[in-house]
Picture 1 (cartoon, one colour):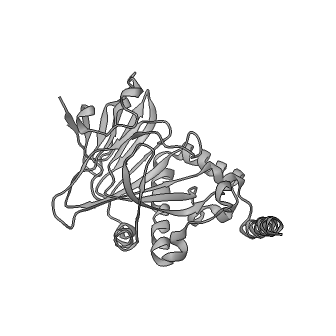
Picture 2 (tube, rainbow, N blue to C red):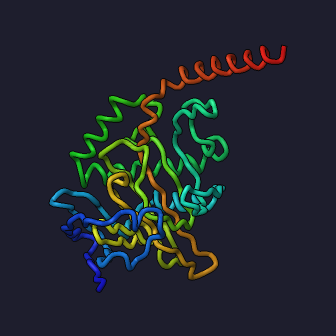
Length: 283
């Protein structure tokens, strides 16, 4: 039987859980379901796994940056893509992207930054809100994360001088169970959820037998590489219904990036080499 763990906004309860011994083959890359878990968390809490803080969930937040973020999320253009699992998603990446050797890309700002700079800036600005709660609720892990960014990453690639490099904005995307990949190891990512006239769209974590409601104006912080998670089906209760989830994370691939001017110089050299090879083949 499912039960609800609730708290008042000023009373963030501590929840203790154990990691279940699951056959992950039965969960990975299949649709997330609310009934996969028995515990439903509706309000703010700190969740500990084996006495170690693993998840912070904050519901019903009031901050002007969230209103500004919602406006920008309704204005940007999204792209549809098909994941390896076959699920079609509607999303847009923001912040910075690492090199892509197959496409001869350098480290760079994502295309949203050049196509829609105003809304890109507003989305990146909300990274500071995530960082504020991260630093407050888990100062030791935040300090570790900050040290990794300061030691491994050129400052040019830190989103608004936070620990985060990049992010993705999702528009009404249910997501199959998965582990995140490519991020710094052993640190947290942060997700903001904004939704209206929506049922479902909960975050399910079967390894800890827990579903988080992810209500409007909520934030959740956890290690997406270390905890299996998925988003349950989303139903629009009104044609205008939208569910945005905005995830902020730190990509390990950005550690290889040079300062911006050096990246530009590197790109020019690579381009010259490619053009010389093409010219040689045509002669």
